Amino acid sequence: MEEKKRLRQLIKEKRDQLTWQQVEEYSDKIAAQLFALPQYRSAQTVMYFLHFGKEVMTQKMVLESFAHGKRVVAPKTVKEGRQLLLAEITNLEEDLTPGPWNIPEPKVDILPQVDPQEIDFVVAPGLAFDEKGNRLGYGAGYYDRFFPRLRPGVPLVAVAFELQILDNIPVEPWDKQVDMVITEKRVIRCRK
Image 1 (cartoon, helix red, strand yellow):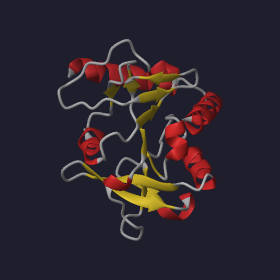
Image 2 (cartoon, one colour):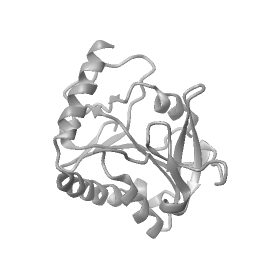
Image 3 (spheres, one colour):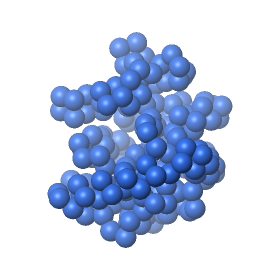
């Protein structure tokens, strides 16, 4: 656990050193690769995490997905039980509100809620990844609890900057892997 804590701090510091111009440029390159994936193209319902700080800019991707005719779903964190509630969003300005950590979240009280079984493709967050698909999250376990609620075989695709790729991520038995990681430089296929 100490090792994970140390890695989280290290990656946050490295990511915060990126300029906003780099964040935007790298995010655009990542988006182009994501939209080219056959798994994305065939998906009808796409779930995105909504970025904050210097994460990959997923809100821009959401706008593109609207233009692609996709149904877009975003998560709201529920602190009790550390669960994610899903809601369909159609408008970034009207449908979102700042959540507990100031992360944009859907207004689940007024938007249609979505069953995780309806999701065809997940854009997953994380602080760091390795090439085997191991994921270092922010430490609260929301996504590790959420992933098993999806249909088997739904692609879990992480978006991250190349500096977030490590040789090895320490894993616990409950940690869930992603299928792919897309950076500004490459698509890492973690599971064949």
